[in-house]
Length: 79
Image: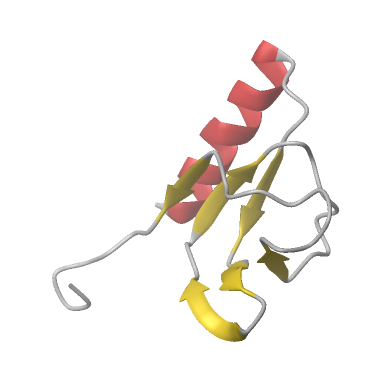
């Protein structure tokens, strides 16, 4: 399911010509004083595009903002 979501979002980014990255398992961190606090969506879209090698999005850093779209896939066993 996650691979299909990534494919759909990447196709959408290309089709509409957005400067965006579709990323998997990236940590989104909210506060510099509490860098362990945040969320880890399965898939997210970040605008503007950032390198696919990024492992975290720290919102206090220059050029970083919250993801435009964040998706968490849950199953009956993990909900």
